[in-house]
Length: 209
Picture 1 (tube, helix red, strand yellow):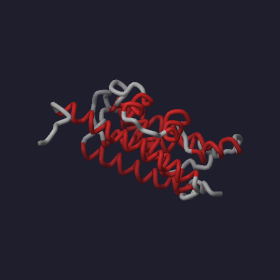
Picture 2: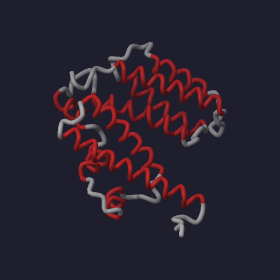
Picture 3: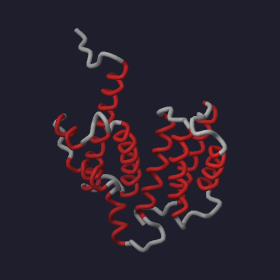
Picture 4: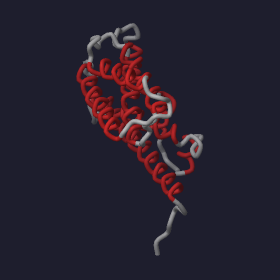
């Protein structure tokens, strides 16, 4: 006999989001333990951790009404994930970023700003996947991304991500707040974000350096 966890589409989406949140927390816990045990390189750890943190922030923000406390969520589902809670909720940046920020606080390549850029990239791409395509939804995300990219002195003025975000912001500013991107525009923006993200990661000094 099949047992249904939901009564309608809204409940089904809620439980699917719960499952995704559960998976992100568990994956972060495993990643933290792998890094502590030196099973994964610092650069691989940092890349994966930044993605998990960004996905977590996007998902937890959309679930803030149904999951007001991540700690309670962890308790309800009896998850033993203290390392993940510290990384996702308390710290918000990878351990490698914390270490670099502490040892090179005056560096022109601010580790915290790098983390902020990655989170802004992934949040923007995730939002498009969630069909958040209204101008008043897209513009603030791209504006935050553009601002964070401009903080990094290691990126040249003609860096792909800077120029593309400037073009998109100019395009969006001519549209109404309630206007929506067409499917073609949304696909192009996602492509530009992904391309810019890959260029951004390639431009960064290795975490192991």
